Image 1 (cartoon, rainbow, N blue to C red):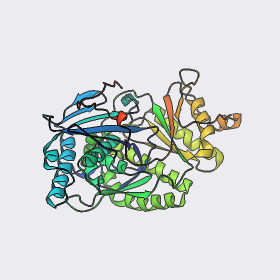
Image 2: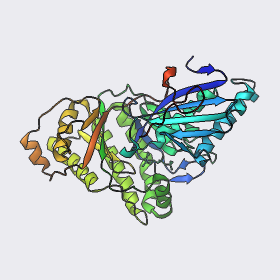
Image 3: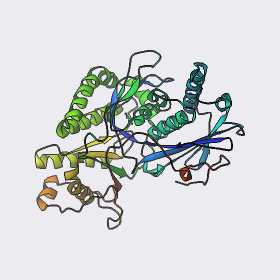
Image 4: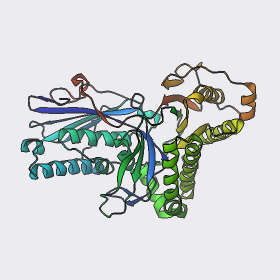
Length: 404
Ligand code: DP6
């Protein structure tokens, strides 16, 4: 039994991954249910490098639902958090009423304490809402004994969270029902499918806080006709091609579609009125660098994608990682001597030829990138079996305040 029932306290801890979209979700057709205007597809990143951990406890003694995020108590009445809690409790009640008592009725009426932390600094500007809501929903489902489809609930916390419910390569099918019942995530291929695929998160030094995705996409839906064209006429075909590229492990096709889709997403941001800029001069330099690197070799060896922030996510194959990391380090010289510049999966040393440096031929941008997280595709949410890992202690309160 992974869960522990100690003195009326029922406690479960789970972890969930971050995902990075290669076909972007941008725009909702229903704000309350979080229904998108187009399907999207992502790669789930490995939890050894990036994950959220969440502990949920229930007890008769709890007076109210409470939540602590990264060491700080937050407002539990947040509407999206309430949507997830309501939906989980509704399903638990339904199961009990259907004569499948997974939990006693006291459990159902009990309040929850939720505590959640990320293993990466919030300051890195990595999207944490996807991993956060996926982890919340997955953990609540374990507490309330709910099995089966969870992506439709995670979606109501944050759209992209529905894709973090699965590992590997995941599509979020937009669906067409008004109630959103068919707007769900689905695994395309598991994380073991393409073992050579590597992911480098280039953590940029953000200049200012960018416009959040929720409000950014609202303005785009209202004002961008390019976004409408993209959703109706571009994404459907790209989804088919992307799934095919992944199934065939065709890196050139996968990489080109990934870059084109990132560029089109940022074009819709520029087409938004007033325009939204997520790419800065460092992002532009990374884009040029990738294209020049690929041109030098006459093939697509590396691909970039950018979300609603300045970090670049690079896809490549294992054999190209050492040299490409050297290229990044050369054109974005770090502050120190390069120690700790690369974190995560170990990267072998490589030397850079003068010919390659010259053929890229860009002016270096010192300190443009803070550090690199080297990772790969990984599994979906997991239950943490070790009870010492619970974030709440036996009194149901956070064990320690973790300042991130
Ligand atoms: C650019 O899922 O953060 O990362 O549904 O409003 O919570 P809400 O938005 P969110 O949007 C993610 C946008 C994106 C692209 C993507 O992940 O598909």
